[in-house]
Image 1 (spheres, rainbow over the protein chains, first blue to last red):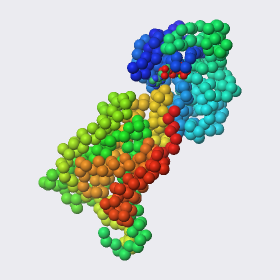
Image 2 (cartoon, helix red, strand yellow):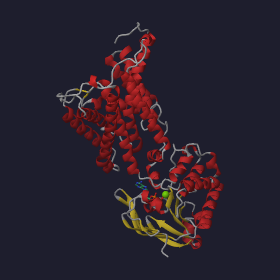
Image 3 (cartoon, each protein chain N blue to C red):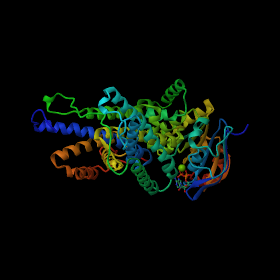
Image 4 (cartoon, rainbow over the protein chains, first blue to last red):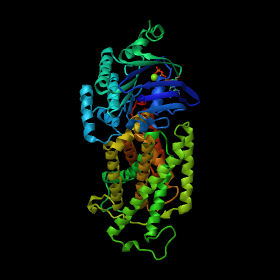
Length: 238
Length: 325
Ligand SMILES: Nc1ncnc2c1ncn2[C@@H]1O[C@H](COP(=O)(O)OP(=O)(O)OP(=O)(O)O)[C@@H](O)[C@H]1O
Ligand SMILES: [Mg+2]
């Protein structure tokens, strides 16, 4: 079976500058894959390019039997790919409930949307408590939960997660990662995870890629990377 | 103006308030187009006032085609006195029904042809283009209606709807102004607040990248926003033409300036702000003419704008902090 997501020789960037030079990676159905790398390596740009929010300049993106290379971002969601973007990008003046509804924008199955809304409130009870409040009034951790829940509202086959732990208290990080692992284990949802916290990321992921200045320089099983001396020195602070 | 009884200070004041609110409601309707477009693409659509102006000429052309006198056509015309109330109301409805999609389509077309290709260009490019489009549309108006003020059929009278002994005048024209503008503003508010598309508009305005990642076709949403703003301007044009009785190719410039000021005053990008700003400008204009002097109204309006912006740079209802992340 071909991988769910397959990125080949991807090149993209902003303005006159190429940020990604040669990114190749894949995510199988049911897999959690992580991308680690220093600040500015191009992790966020990779996720945005895969989602179509940044234009592909070279190479190929294939997802679940579709060629996404020229597909605009708004058509990607209904194919089963959702993203919780870097910096959360909550709609600050929409309520928590409206933010979640936007996550289901491409869906028309109203009763199932209502079901999923209840599921999100089950996963993140704080969002239910604050569903009438403006998204911008939530704390950082709550906004992160909202960003993830909003992405899940599209019922994705693949969830792209960009730095879900950034700026959060350790127990909230644990909580969020438990939920991600659970969604993967129980529902078979695939995850492409970008994390600053490389140790944490490599612990939850099955496989990992290392990015350096727009290129994949290392790819292996997460457990292997976790014990690789180069990784330990460069990304795990040892 | 004749009063049944000698107006006291308060009846005169109340009269200015009625007239000011009516004018303000009209300005608010135009201001909504500026503010919605700014809210979603951070662009001052300088052509908006001229889209409004073209709506006036379209309405007049529709009436001439229906057999009324106007635009130099005066042979075998229907006499206004021969038309009943319902016939007149029907003609007004027809004007609205045609001017709104007409102006909506023009505004959508401007976005599609001019602004969309410049969406990622430096700020100055769409701004200068907007000024250019404004001039082009003004010239279309000049070609359509000529350089002089053009009479617009008086389908709505100046009859007072209030009993004479109140000393106040709420004319049929005033009622028409409120009758068109208020329901449209309420409809817009409900649409933006409660419909899926309305929420998508707000989401796109607040974070376009995130909106795209939710599966929202932001280009389409932006186009629809232009169309709605244009349609409101089209309705405003019909109201203005009926109220004032003449239209001209320059009417977009002057009223556009008032409306733009209203949008900034209320907090550009905010729908309630445009309504508030419009009403304030209407009131200031009428109070100013009554108590300060007609020739000072312009200075007064802009003086107030400057004072408010000094103390609240984001306008009355604008959010004091930047929310863009
Ligand atoms: N919108 C943009 N316009 C221009 N350059 C950008 C933009 N976004 C990112 N860049 C540049 O692209 C490069 C890669 O950025 P990117 O955000 O993809 O890195 P990252 O690996 O996600 O880093 P971080 O760990 O800090 O999030 C950086 O040099 C950055 O300055
Ligand atoms: Mg990043």
